[in-house]
Image 1: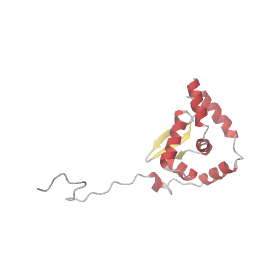
Image 2: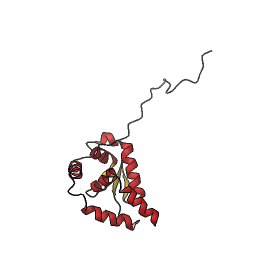
Image 3: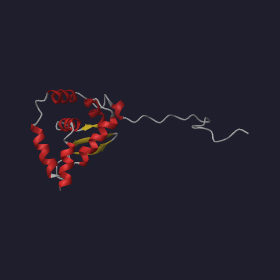
Image 4: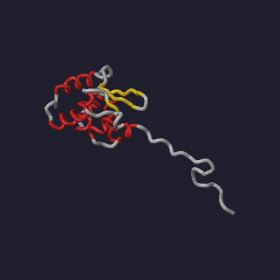
Length: 138
């Protein structure tokens, strides 16, 4: 029980992760939307989401090409459930969070989907080796 408590407290001790929770209070978001809202690199966003997920604060679900994140229902952790409820009323007047939440409301995953979609694999032309040759010239 104590380890779970510490995970939740650690997860909420970081400014970026608290901001993510505040964003997810408004709607479900994919990684690229969070990335655009927070102006962070995708690996950073994914790392922070993993911490929140391990603490039981957020959960993910796959929808086509996107992985959507939302606040968890708190059924896995009484600590996560309680702190989500408290955080809902906290920091609503913080200028930085208000600005990020307002800007995020205008984000559209379809418009920024170039950041969400995996890049297609390069096409290999027939008859041209795709990698270094394994044959040595005599």
